[in-house]
Structures are given as structure tokens and as C-alpha cells.
Image (cartoon, rainbow, N blue to C red; front, side, top):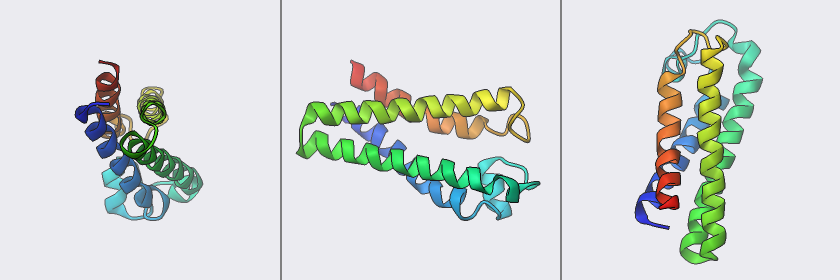
Length: 132
């Protein structure tokens, strides 16, 4: 696995891990709501889902870091498979977030663009770099 793939996957993993506390524990704060691009209305009703999404994001981030560790110190082919799988998950989850916005499920509408692009680009770059 080349350096571009490793760097893109690693940064993406760290971003997914770093966002977890905001989604899981600090969603009620106005500055976090602005950062995540969500409306403050009904936060109590969605906190369960935001916690679960945050937990899934931290798990995929940790899985990616484990895969990168395997690439360097374990079985490289298994590590590449783990990293590719987690990057596919990150990319598809990001695209689904954009789809939810397009369907009108994200309030305010269009609020997911920053998050969708931000969470899709690096996994996509890593997957392209893995495939070449």
C-alpha cells in the first residue's frame, strides 16, 4: 500500500474518531450543532441516533488504524483488505448522508454538504490509491 493511500486512510480515520465526542456527547451545544450543520430543534429526540452514528464512526476509524498497523507490522495483504473495507464503509456512509439530505431528511436542507464532502474525499482518495 502506497503512502498516499496510508496517509488518506489514516487522516480519514482520525477525523472519524475526532468527530465521535461531538456526535455522542456534545450534540446539545450550539457550536457543535453549527459545526455538524444541524438544527437545534429536537436534539433530545435524535441524541440516541447521533450517539450510535458517532459510535459507528469511531469503530470504523479504529478499524482503519488497526488495518494500517497490520500493513506496517503484520500481514500486509490482510491489512490492505481491512483498510479498503473500512474506507468503502466510510465512503458509502458519507454518500448515504448526502442522499438523506437530498431526500429532505437533513434539516436544514443542504446542511450535510460540508460533512458529506469532508468525510467522502479522503476515503475515496485512499481507495483510488489502493487500486493503482
